Length: 150
Image (cartoon, rainbow, N blue to C red):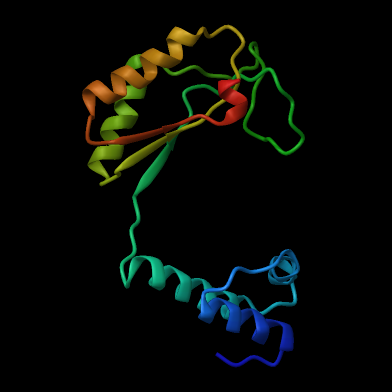
C-alpha cells in the first residue's frame, strides 16, 4: 500500500511485517489529517491476518428500564428527576415486551443501560436480568456500564 505520507508508509510497512506500532505511530493514526480509508485498509490487513476473511456482527437494541438518574451529566438529555413528569420506570411486563420486540425484530442482543435510580435496590436489577434471560435465553444480555454497577 503506497501513501503520499512518509510516516503512514513506515506504519504500513510495520503493519504488513507484523511489527508492533510505537506510541508515536498510534498518535499519528489518530490525527485528523491521516487518511481514514488508508487506516481502514491497514486495520483490515490485521483483521484478516487474525481472523481470515470472516467477520461477525450482532443485531442489538437498547433497553432503558428507567431514566430516573441522580447524576446531572452535562452531555445527557435522557435523564429525569424522580418527580419529573418525563421520568419513568418500566415494570416487568414492559421489560418483557421489549424483549419480545427484540426477538421479533431478529435481535441477538439487548444492551441494558439507564439512569442511576437511587431508590432501586440491587435485587431490582438482578430481577430485570433474570426475567429477560428466563423468557429469552437466546438473547445475549449486555448490561450496564461501570458507573451503573459501581
